[in-house]
Image (tube, rainbow, N blue to C red; front, top):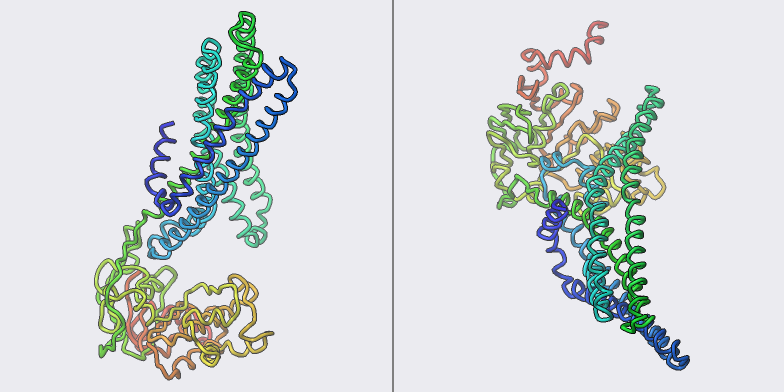
Length: 587
């Protein structure tokens, strides 16, 4: 119960702010639900009047009038219920909409460090299922959180208006029912959390197997993976059965108590009827009130379980919203610069969040406007880390990175990234047309500008062959395109914006040598003459660069031209020999 109260407190404190624009709905929803409950409490009294007056006296007209009253109460109650549902749903949906917008906007403002720490799958879960669960919790709270206690205490009070002595049975029964209902709830809430964790495990295995189905089949691991799935699924089933057995005790125990209470009511009612204190219809009303109490207590218990789940989901969402970016935006915008170097690294070191070891250490490089800088090294040597510091995807730990003579931390991020066109290692395209994908870098790019970029990127030929050309559809992730086609389109997308600095982060790995060479030649001939950074494992892609930075385990072990590095840098020479050694031997 403490965890429920604590979770609800955090939920109210952190997320209740998103209901501030729905104050009217948040008040009217519960209000109309209480009105419905009030009319419902009068129904047993009307039934008592029908029995004690109409049926007892054989007064059909009175019975019909009272039936009309019942219909009237039903219609008014239904109207109030629908109205309450409308306001509650409007508030809950509006709350979830604002929460999703705030959460998505907050995630977009996080740096790569926070995104790496949280993980993509976690953020997707927060945006989807967690928000949906919280929405359901808000809806139920607005409709039922006041109604159920109101019915329980209202029914008990109405029972006292009928007969005090008989109503004392309610005073005994309600605490006993509460102990059973809330006792089972306290036992099952932590178990439901375990069920959820087991379910997460099953979903994780399922997602992993579906994503890696080709690898699993390639290594003939189907039977092993099926066995692992059955094990995890068996654990989930066992836990669900265990918590289900405990939950299943609620109905038998509560119905035993309520039936014992009804027996006591009928017995006590019979005695009171014989003495003339109350009438038969009032006994029926007391039994109806007892049934109402049972139903509402069960509803309240289920509501609290749902709200507990919602509070847990709300806490996870709040954790993301509390995750503040470590990168503060600068104030400088794009200016005409006369700096000697387009990009300058001075003794730069950088640590990833949570890592004790530096990803790169003491890196220095100079790139003049229009120069081409190559970056090469073994896997994990820090090549991508270096180029990610130029658009400030990560903040450095030591040293400084200057773009056009100004520290990247002083730029407004939007202004800095307008200067830079980056093509990441993984070619990512979005569902839509080729034209829509090309305009990501420049919203108002003309078709001529797009075709110019496609030509430079060596993509114009295959785009022309597609039905619809620029209007050809690109499926999600570009899965209807080959790896080389995706890479060329992502390169073209970066070129459309005509950046001052172009970063190609191993973005030509799927291209053949001839296409790669044609691409590099076309980029060198661009009239804008951008400063180009090329990250590659191929020495052939870098040998014509003005300078080449050689990295080994996060440190710079070489800087110079291709011919200089062949003479002076052992690491570069080893990479070159591994790719061209056979040709040299045959020669």
